[in-house]
Image 1: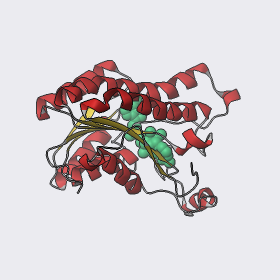
Image 2: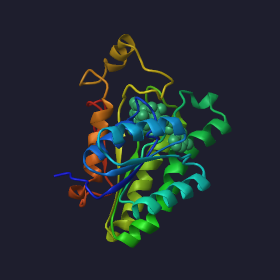
Image 3: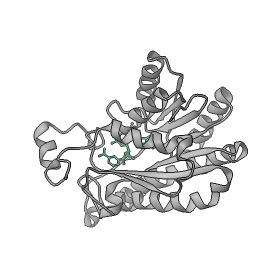
Image 4: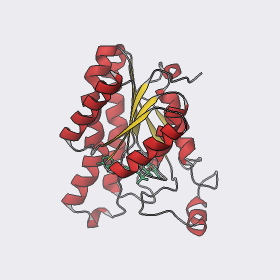
Length: 253
Ligand SMILES: NC(=O)c1ccc[n+]([C@@H]2O[C@H](COP(=O)([O-])OP(=O)(O)OC[C@H]3O[C@@H](n4cnc5c(N)ncnc54)[C@H](O)[C@@H]3O)[C@@H](O)[C@H]2O)c1
């Protein structure tokens, strides 16, 4: 079960040292996939690729700003030149901003929508032709519990809207491409202690943030990565347009 030997993967936002993308990249590589570590932070991406190589896996790193058409084209070209195909696209890159609607500027809105939603949309679009040609693909998109419960601890309404847009985009696209052997799903995590808010929370802050979560703790990035790996596996081939909630019970549909 869940053997990704021979599969190739692109993970975006995978260059953050404590981030979800890094855990996804390591987990996919641990299952045998060749992993392209993409991030706007090239140094961070290189470090994660090296970690994979040090563990005996195969990885490459490249600077990838998902909002840049040029970056997207260069990275996909690099992947096809090295590995011919792309089987798995894990769209993990994202940014947030804790701000009320009244304090949100148009620039804030455009930045949050552009990275979280537009970047994911167009990287997926760019990757699709090759997946269609191969008759196989696994797209896993990163949403958030804040898409479903209306806001969260660290995101403004623009962030919630972008993450809800990811869910709708995934469902709509899944209908278009399922007959090509391509599935499109999302994960919707609750809080994990990463650098997305600008730094790791200390034990006291984490305890405060956990108080209302039935599991009484934050998610680990490995728990989120495990769900991504499942959706990226061949075994999940009959699941599409779905999302997996990973929120310790803080929101139940
Ligand atoms: N941490 C949480 O509690 C949480 C909860 C739900 C959803 N998420 C989502 O998970 C994803 C990963 O977040 P994280 O918590 O690991 O944060 P993180 O800040 O540790 O990692 C995000 C990574 O995305 C990269 N990035 C930012 N803009 C980019 C761009 N334009 N192109 C390419 N890469 C870019 C950053 O350089 C960084 O390496 C995000 O989409 C976030 O919204 C996080």
